[in-house]
Amino acid sequence: MKDFFKYVFATVLGFVISIVLISLVFVAIIVGIVSSISEDKKIPVESNSVLYLNLDQTIKERTLNKRFENLPVIGSGEKSIGFNDLIRGIKKAKTDENIKCIYLNVSAPGAGKATLKEIRDALVDFKSSRKQIIAYSEVYSQDAYYLASAASKVYLNPQGALEFKGFSSELMFFKGALEKLGVEAQIIRVGNYKSAVEPFITDKMSDYNRQQVTAYVGGLYNTFLEGISQTRNIPKDSLFSWANNYKIQLPQDALNAKMIDGLRYKDEIIAELKTLSGTEKGNNMRTVTINDYAENLSQDTPSAKDKIAVVYANGDITGGEGDDNSIGSERISRAIRKAREDSSIKAIVLRVNSGGGSALASDVIWREIILSKKVKPVIASFGDVAASGGYYIGCAADSIFVQPNTITGSIGVFGIIPNFQNLLNNKLGITFDGVKTGKYADIMSVNRPLTSGERFIIQNDVNHVYDSFITRVADGRKKTKEYINSIGGGHVWVGTDAVKNGLADRLGSFNDALVAAGKKAKLKEYRVVEYPEKMDPFKSLIENTTDKIKVYYAKQEFGDNYFLYQQMKKAIINSGLQARMPFEIKVQ
Image 1: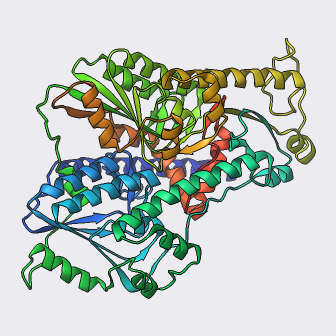
Image 2 (image 1 turned 30 degrees about the horizontal axis):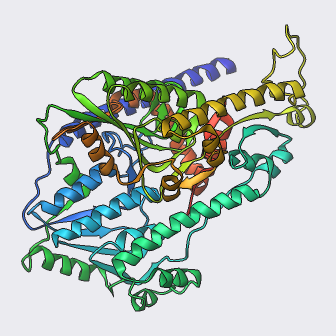
Image 3 (image 1 turned 45 degrees about the vertical axis):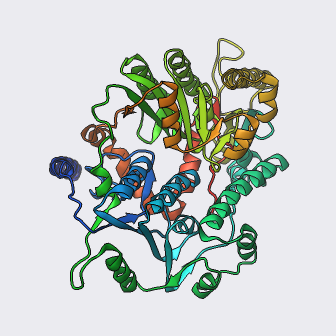
């Protein structure tokens, strides 16, 4: 009888949980329908409006469909906008008579270095309209100040803070932890600079890795200082010295150094914005957010017959479909193929923001670029990172555009085969036995170390993939294999150095790449179409709700350490040979 009630209780509990989950999905669908209706409504921009530029949000490659973003657990709850929509919004506001000025609010922008430069350049261009940009924050991170320094006036809260200390990049090493667990990371690689494997086999940076990290962090820092120097009219050497000696500690220090224009409270900022916008005393100031403003925008030439396709390749490169945050070889290849076969599309711009991934998936995408290049111009625009597999998929383009602070190169290949023998046998008491029909039938077994013969076979495979990689690059860049090998080997470069050594053609923005594509296709006017199609929100909800719930609770559990959890998980699940960045770059 006791077991009977136990089973009945379990059945009832399962039924209740199922009903709750179904109800959540049902509510989500209803909310999605309602929000989709509201999304179709354009927000009117009244005269004498202030464009509110909140950059303390995630700035993605594309503006995603947000119907379920505000739902608890299922949605991220975070605001986001595509960098191109954001820049188009700023460009439109420059000539919009209803927009009188921009209010820039930023403390810690959610974007990479190259994306920040794209946005900053758009802000500098906006000022040529003689409209003002007022930047204000209680706290400026270094990235935030980099953006704010482009404003006409930069204000800081009198009790606030401005971070200005220089750049640092810290790597995490797992060798000690793996040894305690009894796990051996067996490494097969090509290239002295291909240091993605170093965290698993050493406890500090190699000389080669330290050399390249020093070079690219210095390159990023140089772009950072040059931008601030130009708009604030402060010598770069002075900025370097202040950061190096940590001279900017208090708000008054920033004011004395003329890094800001004043110390203000929020009410004083509002008063100044009212004056700039011509708001009459006693009236509320009219504002429109950049998110709403960008949604109002349409293509400049919507009736143009000719089109340029932008194919967004963002995230880790994997086989299969992928999603809006990863590059699935099937989905991206299909998008490129569709753009190639559409006669109304006269050119393709491949927008890459990826540290790489599967070497095989990268080659599948590369093949579609080669085929497309034979029938229409293909221009590559590299974002924050286009390295290893990310560089592989773009190397065949007719021309490659990078920002000075784009991270690229990293031409190399590696494989990691874990050996759990010590963990399983000696720590857990688990042993294995079996039969096989051939000497190498269990070549990828993870319960024992590789034999010398197996290591030789895998090394040959890695060498073959690397040779294919440098051959692809040499053909695309019109260089010799020997030369590409000399700048390859896993070496990471910043955009300025990539242009010098021939891995890229020009320093330029995403829009510059579009213009170049139009010129190469000899188009007088065109409209832009985006590929691949954005994921359907309802389908995504049904298919990915479980994964989103897992991510939600993982974030709650790990907090700021969720990033580290992601990296360790990625290292475990990656299969096959990898053309991947040496490490996750996090410069702060």
